[in-house]
Image 1 (cartoon, rainbow, N blue to C red):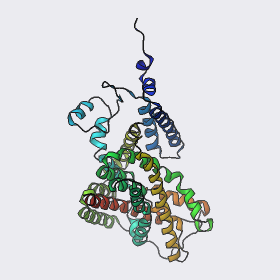
Image 2 (cartoon, rainbow, N blue to C red):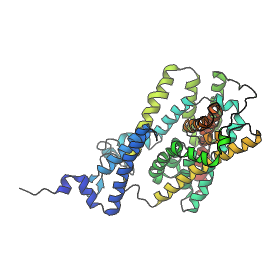
Image 3 (cartoon, rainbow, N blue to C red):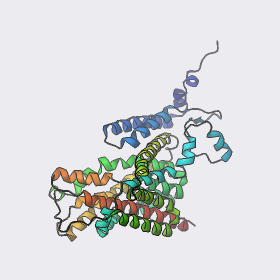
Image 4 (cartoon, helix red, strand yellow):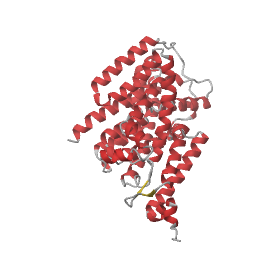
Length: 406
């Protein structure tokens, strides 16, 4: 009887031994990280809808590596680097996630679906109540998006790569995905993975940043309402969304799919299409987010993430989100001084546009210090303005940077 090679029979172990200690160590680390993400998602510390499928995908892809017919290492999930059309058609019949990746992820479709769902969550009335304050805070909350670009360039990334990782500072995953697909396709997998890993930090990290930079007495401020905020009816909000969509698509046609998707969601919310609203805000948003998490997990193949540039991306992603958080809080302080103390500077953190996470974070922090202080309206105004501002910056980067690279 022919002897059985243990490594060939159980290829997860076999590929671990054949891949060398660097790749094997990276696989083990990613497996442990995946298990940690599952736990943190289950505990509610990170967003479970993204982190649980992402963590499970990381575990499966790094455990399920096998020997391919050509002798190399691979998997039966997907190949993100496949570009040859004949090979793609063949692989789409073998790798079970390849059709979803090719037809819905690598072209930004899932990002647009998620953005459409986000649009249904936006009540632009909060923005219209205090438009100038909200826009000012949103610009402050993009500090990381602006400053990370020159920092990344100084570290050796080209302008397209620098702009893509800088968009992590906007705290909007779809924008990072869209920008990296347009400007840094060779790095969009690690950039997008880094972005969604770090977006979880807005849950766990920003409260500590706020407590570090804003003293307790200021966190407890209850703003005095001198004038009852005006309530805008649905037709005004619908008209505002339609006009803004037209203007932004006219100025930045390259990013028009993002603008269109966002304002379609807003239009569905404000036009009273109940069944469509329930579909877009429910199955479409949550289903797309879940599939996105799944795809991000299986893209965390160790050999894809061992590019030397990935370490820079890990550092720059943290820098971008940190600078944006600091910028938002500085904006809150500026409004505090302009309004002579009748403004809670914690609102500034909501300008980092992870909708509606940072707005909830701001209200939770304030409520802990003063249960009678309600800042959620102002926070949502800054939050919604932050989403739109982040999309505009995406449009600027995607439009201008290709000309600078010529």
